[in-house]
Length: 323
Image (tube, rainbow, N blue to C red):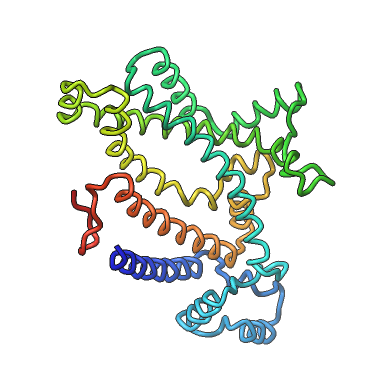
């Protein structure tokens, strides 16, 4: 296990290193590029060259990359071009805000979706199963921004049960109760989308496992249905679900741009869109790297959880999984 983890961490470091190269080259190849954004307009050629020299933009791209990666390893994510503010000072609070919103929506959807999907796999085409299918269709089909605006229209403007937008009421920053009230509507929007996906995955996975020969054998031996479902079937059914959860882990810091924009939530998704329109390349590179790290962590955690939920899954010497 330890050898496997060390190997996977080294592979992850290599993947992230390659991502930094691709990200840096793409940013420099973008129209306008960081050079034009970092230099003030209307400068004379002499002042332009001097300012480019001061910023290190007159050096070859590979030297600029090594300077950037060196700063990155020291925790320096650079500065915004327009206001010259430290990217790290702007980034980490927004990651925290997005983690609160996305994490809460994620947990709510998991608590509801997986047990409901498992139950529906044992009551196929029953009332619960058909209700879940109807909710899933709504979750997949309904535009996020439209659903958010609809909730605001009814529950904020008409009924006045919940705040319209933002993360806190002015003057109540740090108030947990006020934060909870602001979370209800955006969590509802996000959880509906998660719920539709996870419920379908958990139901389909359980149905596939419950159709296996060893499940029929257990039932023929008189094993109680509850034990068949939760002891024999659930562990195998969880493996595809874990894969999906590992792939979705980056959203905890990546955010949901549409939902955050509708509810004016100061998170990563909304900020990424704003920075993209303003061509703040240092911010875009920082967000890309953070998201890439979360993708790597999500895949690593999924691999580890395979062995936790199913003892037959072994993390072999070749880094593969053998039953």
